[in-house]
Length: 96
Image 1 (cartoon, rainbow, N blue to C red):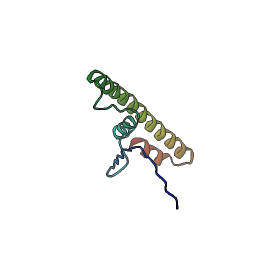
Image 2: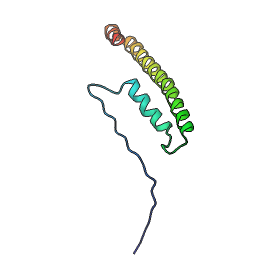
Image 3: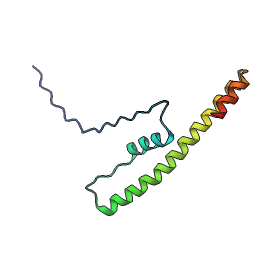
């Protein structure tokens, strides 16, 4: 007979859904920063406030680059569609 004991760390699971499309850059940035930065509620108040300020700063940066990546992906898709001979479709996609 085998007896196995495993100590597993506690994991927080967060599920985020969206309606009528994918997640917005804001929602994706929030998910990213939530994974990267956390601070204990038991931390010293000065440290907690500094961490929260840092989190907000990182949120702005991550949101900016996610938005930029989405725009660049759209531009790449438009160029590829145009190169495939579908100028009208590329123009419609670019205007979305």
